[in-house]
Length: 154
Length: 154
DNA sequence: ACCAATGATTGACATTTTCAACGGTCCGTG
DNA sequence: CACGGACCGTTGAAAATGTCAATCATTGGT
Image 1 (cartoon, rainbow over the protein chains, first blue to last red):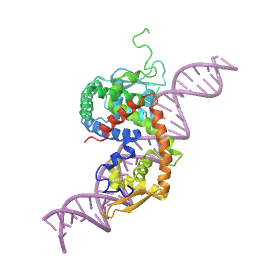
Image 2: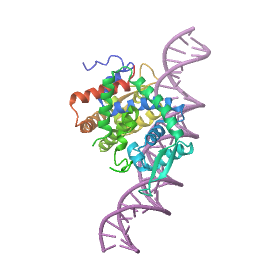
Image 3: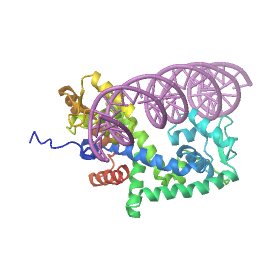
Image 4: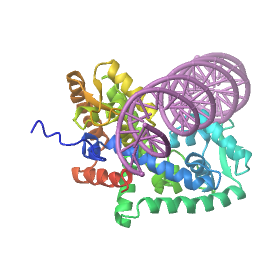
């Protein structure tokens, strides 16, 4: 019993440790891996997951302010400034002062921005499908649903 | 609802945007929130999610080497050095040179370490249950299973 | 006995996160 | 209408994290 210490963690005995059931850990690790995969795939479009997300929100006409972007992406407003600066310098996105509130900037994608997004989105989708290749579409959707619960606790 | 663009993303129109179905984004956001919650709960034990994970693996007798730790937690080996330094300074953990390979350090928790871990684990579990309070235990387990697929793609 | 490969460590460097301060604008109250 | 407090975006700096190359001791194969 106590001396049940046969050989060590071989390779992946750790996986069966306490952490194997720890949601926070699993999320962190899953996030690290998928983020890396996504960044790799988006790199050929000159994007990362962050800039892709900003571009996505600008591209589908939601016209978000930078503050909304910050809250949605869980970033500090100053990080959004940098992100938008980058996209704007590449003419993928424009800052328009919100007519309803001249303090706020509303983000709008340019034609080039929508174009690039369309291409990048295909890459993103491919990555996602690759990551969940071993899973049925129903399970895929169930996972998304459960993650939404965690991501948007209302 | 009158003019084409009524009021804007109001609060959460963004949620229904393209990203609402983007797994990478959902993972990132869910991870950010749960990590923050976990760190807050672990703070009273002087731990963060990272140090908690290391302590957990040391505490349940897996006797992992630092390299195994690094790979498992997806960290650079140099980060593991710092993490272990911190725990060792607090006498929660010991480095023992692996008799089977004297280059490697095996991590073992001290009594105090196991003790602290037991208490921290309760806090961690409480957080996890709180996060998934709206979900049945079966769904909770299903989520963990799907995350394991992403976290450990074999 | 040699030598390429590996584990831990260190130090340098880049990237990301987190905060406080500021000017411009909004809006409710007096 | 003017005031003052709150809010938006921006800047800059400090702290925390992540990434990388170099080094030393050790290992395992030839």
